Length: 336
Image (tube, rainbow, N blue to C red):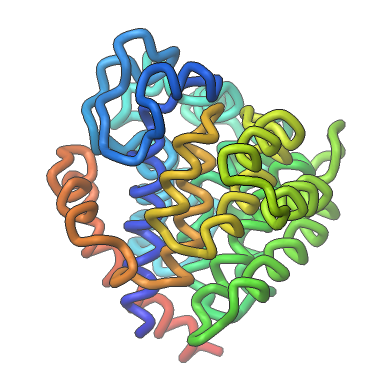
């Protein structure tokens, strides 16, 4: 059961990332290009970030998460050095200095780390959504142990995103994933854990401006639970919660579409794509939670086949990452 949920979280991360990758910045433009985006598509030639990417291609959201997971598995523990090493390894593989989809906070911090800066200070200006988009493996490592997931979240955020909103957003995601790993857990309890993580995370990282992550999650949940048609609710989330690189917007929107989809991974991916904005990141976050909640069997086999055909996905050997995380989970449990 545990391995099925770990696989669900990892494949869910990739599903939301790759399926929503072609979405345009504004929902009107996504609708103009695709109608209702409910099938795998190449990125449009005029895409602001992903132009030229083929259908099923994962991006930095999943690559960063998988690379962090690999480094932690190799180290046998969640450490600051492992987090930094995993991120640098991904950055170099992705040609981060020239890649159009590396976020500003991540690029600034990793360039400093590669120049020899102290990883305890390189993330003090990281306020965009790089931390929550790649934190899901930390939740997968701590099934049901929210406190353990939150403590390790701080460690993983530190090298690139050690500001209050970034840590708060990442803590919301890792706590939700950790709770989703419980057997027969309700989606309401998963979301409650996310809200708890968001509030806890506000006490960590450098003080920064902006609204609270928990507020944006609650705002999105209120819209998601309304009686309006799905497209109307999506548009309200886009207009009122936001869907940019801003952490409270990204994480708030992710929890909103997770609730709208009832925790179903594929439906969550479809909603993320049609929401638009930073859709691949919102989809990666929401579907990582949904995948851990519902398990790998909830992801259609045809969609798994699309992901496994992608050369970048193949290069990370995701099943091996799942095995490594499963073994590390067992080790952490044995160590108490």
